[in-house]
Structures are given as structure tokens and as C-alpha cells.
Image (tube, rainbow over all chains, first blue to last red; front, side, top):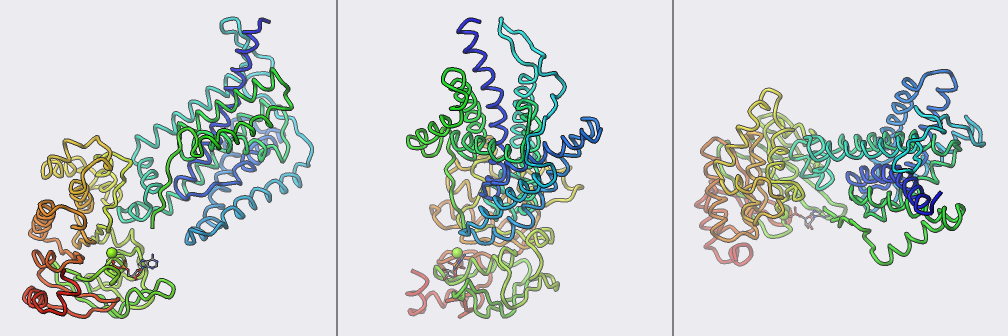
Length: 297
Length: 239
Ligand SMILES: Nc1ncnc2c1ncn2[C@@H]1O[C@H](COP(=O)(O)OP(=O)(O)O)[C@@H](O)[C@H]1O
Ligand SMILES: [Mg+2]
């Protein structure tokens, strides 16, 4: 294999995992917009959904049933999180209670997963394609599974963009994000939109889990928290709250990670990612597409 | 039309309203006059439902509404133009109008959405010209006209305006007030808060003077004018 081919393959792989980081960063953004809460339970949501889907598959249910079932449960969890542990805290804008609530629910889900499925790694089957299916483009061998992940993640993000900017519900969500009290006066049920944003975010977590699990091959109760940190890095790198930033931050992080893995060592992948985060934040505290958050009364 | 009885609102130790009672006649413009911090915004927010009072009652068309959420009061015909020119500044003028219309109108009315938004553009052509610009790029006066236009897209019977003239050039204030007169002529009941009585008396039929959360004076236009002329009051409120 030529060195160019090698580099291109690394970049391709990086774009694929990076697209999943972007998806996770988007999940963070959605709840951040409406409530200014960073949901640290997002990672365990990712894990829990893929665990659920896996256990349904092992019970003999087909993908077509397992995935919607897993998604429904994770959406319900998003609802529960907002309704019972975020909303009561929103009355106290200075309270840092949301960190405890979101992290707490996350750690609880992680413990619950260990209890139900055990702490060991479980094999996650490939989705649609086999691990050995390849597509050849310009002489580069691209894994079909990875390509699928890239395309799905991009399509979902594009869809989200269209929904948010072109539909009245998306505009309402932006309105609540911008000024929840003014939105209420305009008849928008701000609280409902906030709840909805947690449900959509949870769904995105579920999607990210289902996309990344076949690539990882195995999943553990901790994998969600680990990958969430990368999604968080992507969000901060791009500028938290920015859609463009989430996309850009995720893809960039993925590519850097895989280049480091390919040329230095795979065990350095994540370490270097964090180093980069620290450097970039020192230079650009708002991230690349930082949205200034204006606090309103 | 609207009756407030013995309203109390506290923000922690701060007593923002201390037993306010007022009575609003239909199809009138009522001014709430008071210095900064006298409780005007709190009073309007209590009427629209953004703030739930600690004590006291609100009757709107003889129905108690003080425990009802904002969304419900909106449906019953109350619209609130908050202080500080609140707009969805990161969205276009047209999208602001869509948002102003969509969630406060019945399915039946939604069929006429674009027609009603076009009526706004007919009334204020400058908004039509700038309909695809972000609302935040409009001048202060244009923003205020957009906000009032949004507010009345629900065809409210009661319109609350919190210091609509603040920070606007005199000529723009004229434009805003003229529009309020027009709305009154269409049958809308209006409550407008102002710091300056000199402004309020230009459109008000009746007025209340608030001081530290209490009503310290009320009366018709003659009363307000005579008050403006009396020394002690004018030095405090009327600049
Ligand atoms: N959200 C709030 N928290 C604490 N105090 C407030 C709040 N809003 C208003 N106040 C206080 O309540 C009093 C009345 O305020 P407000 O209703 O805004 O008066 P006005 O609109 O006439 O300026 C003031 O003393 C003000 O500082
Ligand atoms: Mg005020």
C-alpha cells in the first residue's frame, strides 16, 4: 500500500468516527440551546441504547424491531431526565444542580447496565454490511460499514439542520433557545419545547450508539461515557451551541485521532485528542464557531 | 374588562407590588406611570401570567385568571409587549411574524396566516422590504413596530405594552403612539407603562401612578395633566 493510500484511509476512517462525534456534539447542543444544560448523561444514553438493541437482537428480534424499541426507551429516558431532574432546577439559574442530575443519571445507567448485562465487553454484530465488506474508490479500500456510518451521520445532521431552520417547530425551538419568556408570550410552550429537546437529544444519542457500536465491534457499560467525552471535545472545539461547529469539531477530532493512531500509536489517540483540545481552548476559548451566550432575565 | 385586586409580588425580600388594585375599562388606553423600579413591569407580567402573584386576584372579563399559565391567557386574548424590545433577533423578520402568529391562532385561523402577515407588510412597508433580514439588524423603531405587529397577530382584546417608547427618537415614538391609537379604534383595550407622564398623557384616557409598588394616584386625562403641573409630582416623575 502506498503511503498516500495509507494516509487517505486514515483520513477516511477519521471522518467516519468523527461524524459520530459530531452527532454526539449535536446531541449536546440541542439541550444546551433550550436549557443551557450540558447533559452529562448523554454518554450513558449512547451506551444504554446500544445495550438495549443488542439484548433485543440476542432475544431473536430482528433489527427492524430492536432499533425502534431501543430508540423508544431512550427517548423515554430523555423525557424522564428533563421532566423530573432538569425542569425543577431551571427555576434556579445559578444552581449547578444539573451537573449532579445529569451525571448522576448517567452513572446510574452505567451501573444498571453492569448489573443487567455484566461488566465484560459484549460483541455487537455488524449492521447491514459485514465487517469484511469493502467499497473501492480511487484505489482506496473503504469499509462499507464505516461508509454507512459516515453517510447516515451526515444525513441525520443535514435533516436536523433543515428541521431546525425550515419548519415552524424548529423555529420555535430556536425561539425558546433565544428567549424562553418571550417565546411563552408568543404562545410557544417553552417547557414543552425544552422537554422535546431532551427527547430529540436522547434519540441522537441512541442513533450515535447504534452507528458506533458495529464499528467498535464490542460494547461495555463504560463505552458511552468514553465516547461522550470525545463528542464533548468536538462540541467545545467547534464552539458549543454551533451546528457548524459540531460538524467541524467532530470531523476534525476524528481525523486527528486516526492520524495520530496511524503514525504514532493507537494508544495515543485519545490522549493527543485532549492535548489538542487544551491547546485550542487556550487559543480560542469559544471554539471555532463559538456562539456568544447572552444571559437573559 | 380587567380588575386587579390587592396584588402582592415579592422577589425574595424585595416587595415589588404591595397591594395594587386597578380597574381597566374596555376600549380605553390606560397608562401606568412610575419611576424606574416602581413595579410597572412586575404588574404587566402578573397580568400576562409571566409572574404568579403571592397574593391578590385578577379578573379578566369577570373570570379569575391569576392562576392560569401564560399560554392560556394568550388564548383568551391577552398580548404582552415586554420591556427591552424583545425579539428573536437571530431569526428573520418574516420568521418572527410566523412565530408571532402560529402558536396563538386556531387551526381555522392558520389558513389566513400569510394574508395577515401581508397585512403587517402593507401597514409597515419597511418590514416587508426587510422581511428576509435578521430582526436584530432593524433599527430600534422598526424593531418596536415589528414587536407590536407580532403581538397583535393573535388579535388580542387586551394589549399590554411595557415602556414602548424607551430609547426611541421622538418621531418614532409618534409613529408607535399613532399605531396604538389605530389599534384602540379597532377595539383593542390597551395598558401602556411609561416613566414619563408627559409621554403617556398624549394617548392615555386614564392613568395610574405607581410608587414603590403602590398606587399613589389615579384619574382621567385632566387629573394626569393637573398632576404634571403640580410641583412635587413633576419633580419626581415627570422630568
Ligand atoms: N427578577 C427580579 N428579581 C429581583 N428583583 C426584581 C426582579 N424584577 C424586578 N425586581 C425589583 O422589583 C422592583 C420592581 O421592579 P419592576 O417591576 O421592574 O419596576 P419597573 O418596571 O417600574 O422599573 C424593583 O425594586 C426591582 O429591582
Ligand atoms: Mg420596567
